[in-house]
Length: 145
Image 1 (cartoon, rainbow, N blue to C red):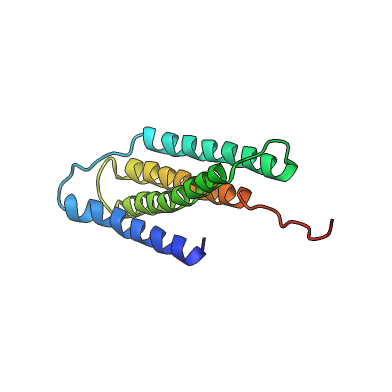
Image 2 (cartoon, rainbow, N blue to C red):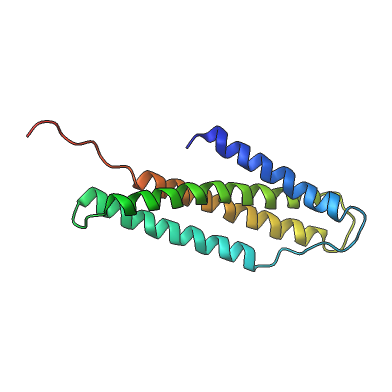
């Protein structure tokens, strides 16, 4: 997975998050609040991905438990999808947080902090997805008997 592709997804999320607040709720004082459920859910997804990466790496490196090629490909697809979506979510939450800078509202700071925290947990999902993708690599076979 190329870093340029991940950056493009992150920038798209950043623009979408910023536009979400500025365009949809431009002059209104009411805008959606990021609750603690969003960062918690993203943290849970990152934890599951890290656990799956550890299990996959242990199975492939030690060879004690055989993973079928079908399951390995499924885990690879899951890893890439989570990395892309995590990057999009992180960018979206960071964009939403940036849109609250300079807004004179009593809840603007709280919205920016919670959105930034959700953005950080989105980056954790990206890291965990990349870790799972790396764990799916099979070591090269020795040609000599």
